[in-house]
Amino acid sequence: MNKAYVLDRTERELNRLDLQGIIYRDATRRALTDCGIATGMRVLDIGCGSGDVTRLAAELVGPSGSALGIDMDAESVQSARARAAQLGIGNVAFEEGEAGSFAEPGTFDALTGRFFLMHQPSPAQTLAEAARALRPGGVIMMLESHMAGLLDTQHSFPHSEIYDEVVRWKCRVVAAAGADIEAGLGLYRIFQAAKLPAPDLRMEAPVGGGADSLIYRYMAESVRSMLAMADSHDIRGFGAENAEQLEENLRNSVVSSDGVLVCWPVVSACCQLSGAAA
Image (cartoon, rainbow, N blue to C red; front, side, top):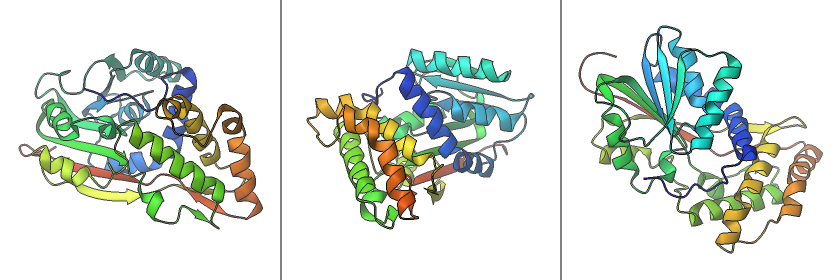
């Protein structure tokens, strides 16, 4: 069901996912709470990766609730389990499996996913199949990146030539790999095609500046993880050597100009199924 994942599934990539989780944690938490995920609920998190969203959901539902993260990648599932064990989270579990065929109908109160549908060849079908796991009145929260937004709008202030190169290179690689760089604003259409209620939508983007922003490292680690995929599609612009210097170069460029960078905008989509109140 999944497209080829754009990034290498290495320990470094799993660490990058953790970094991504920190950058987008506030936006994700707002989306989860606004969608009504609360104490006592049973949550299914699809495409869980290293488990950041699953752990956030587990925190919101508390000990009387539970969160189950599923992912097709065995190494990601193992990593997510290890992180949950280190943190002593008892109401969370992780399993290897496909989003659309994992759970019996009516098993869960909420369905969540972040940066998952953009990698699916048939995102509406995947979402519709996963939604069957929900009881009547269950809620759905999907959060997707709208990477293309940085191609058309101001991504840095003052304008950063280095960051512009990163943004355009990464969008080329992700698109070449078959992922949807317009998935964020495509969520309304995906929900409609999945025969789900029209979702409430919100877009936001992290903005960072100064020497301590995590955006520099996040972008540099993403480039490193994409090098093999870029080579396979004959996309030039970064090699291993300049990728290693990218974090420092980005930081120096922004700090020297007292500037800021805009990280990938994300769109959250939330809806509630018909039936009993959630």
